[in-house]
Image 1 (cartoon, one colour):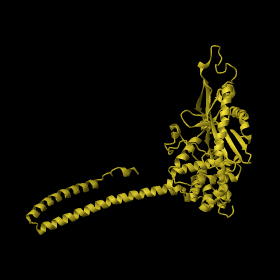
Image 2 (image 1 turned 30 degrees about the vertical axis):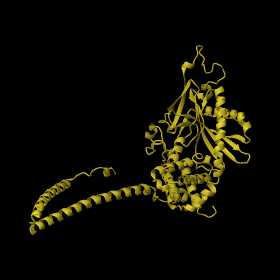
Image 3 (image 1 turned 120 degrees about the vertical axis):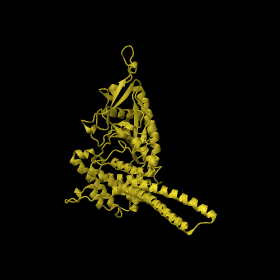
Length: 494
């Protein structure tokens, strides 16, 4: 497309034509001079007049030809631009004619299934969203303020305990995930809260990428080593931080061989939250219990009978960024012990907030995500699935960059759900879905992600499908279940 911004290159014919034009112009000037002289003398004969008319007609035809060539080039360029944009938008999402497997629907590829599916109309999608997905929005809005106050009080008590027992510095919580992004509406909402913690004074955390060349499952994982400042050792050889005997050394509390241990951090944080709750429980009249998880998940049962969950996630913040290292398990492989996973949830929330300023008001992007995530949850319990709402969300975020902003008008909900499913189905067929925040040069510059993350090779979220046929078959089966449920939305009373 850059040719539109530069002068066209000149061929030999162009040079000859330009030379001929100059000759005609010079000849015209001479004739005009002679014409004026004769006109002033009133002596313009018929022969000269005919020569002048012939010359003028030739010049006029030449100018018209040049004008037509310029207009033709411009029109062709505009048509090329329109075709390219159409190709980018539509051809990418046209169903591919996959070969239909002879053994029935269970063996069809995701793209074949999409080609055969009957998508519900926009009205059916809107009705399903209002009835099943968005029904708890009012309770959710009231819950935000309550969770903000409660988590603030609980973490304040945790900070007080840490100051006395370990010297670990807890920061204020950071809300992330589907509930804070306003698409994960549930009757029993879950609020994910990152809790950054820093080492005691005299210690530093050193973050290093895990060596993943020998074990690709460790790509995206990090180890966090602890280093102490020798200036804090007193003359007696004892650490001045613990010389009073009332603080537990960090190496004993959270580390294995001087590396932060995810399991030890998990156990420490659970104990810490339990102590903090006993300090503040007199202020509240609800029941609080813990739920088994890789983080610290609390279940709150209010007097009204309503339930909500708060999922506290201990995290190590990387220097000068909004990247956090967490100990949650993901589909990238089982990682435990000293290996930490990098979370980009804050950047993703930033991106979804930023994109709202470009797309139409009341756009359908979060509504599409809510519907598909809800249908995915209806297929089978999350702990038995490979595909999850994060795969759907990743597909959506890629499309938010690829498609023009006007494509997300509310009335386009049917077409956009088709696009999301086709993008995910295409990824399943290729067994590759790139992480949105890692190695994505199209990420807006307003998202202040470190440059090394923009330039690195993308991480494939579907890598397990390449390694094990059983997981690949399971993922395709889950995808087919979502398509089947979606097709049922056309049925009255679903």
